[in-house]
Image (cartoon, rainbow, N blue to C red; front, side):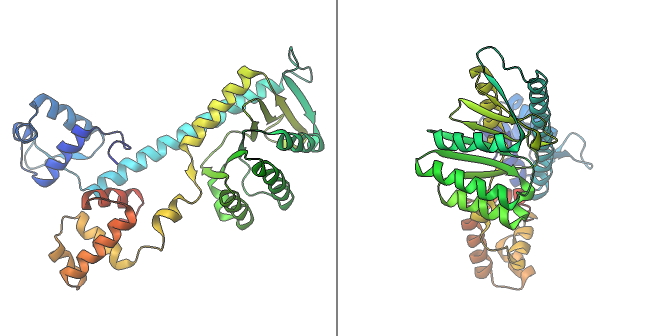
Length: 325
């Protein structure tokens, strides 16, 4: 969890020490961790920068650790904003690249590596040919939100033919397709049949890559009905493959949340997590909830199992990441 958030093992050790014993100074922490004070100070600088520790108002020069629930919610919020900005930059760069290619006009480049397909009928014919001839994989950006019934039917037919031959299919749509029943059902069926569907907050213009050898991109991203460019130049296709892989790594699996969360968190469980994040013991949290300590421990064990957490500390971090507390 700490590594995912950009923190090293030493940062985690210092943060845990400050949580467990707020009054310890740099030298005391260094002695307990068997390290040098300068390394502890370096970790403190990193934690302070990430707002996981704050300077004490009562004792200037002393620091205290922010509770995991609050600190990691703030950290995750900043990382999410950075991720959205990165995805926006990727989409803009891809759009500029495609506009540059489209501006070359109908003349193919040397060797015929750029072919212009005018109109949707020409594009659909080429898509059917690519689905028929695909051998290894098909990679797709689906940036225009919920799909029409006709588009989904065509995609299902092409997918079915490719999947039957063992072709790997990976598709990235926008987050909002999760709210459209028909598109969500298409994505779930694709996953069930061996393909993979993920979503992102923003995407480059529509693109289909087949066998890392051919790419279809729109002539005009604002009006895909105008047609597409069919690219086969190895250098151009390699750039688009790299773009897809980068976007894929930043996208969210369709069923990630459902697999992790299962049923919604019950209110007593949410309250228990909140009390634990505030530093309550099993007994004091149970008193706040008006249940026995044994019941509180059983509830906490169930939460940890659902989160896949090995400790209560890790459970608190994951709960904050998911917005449970």
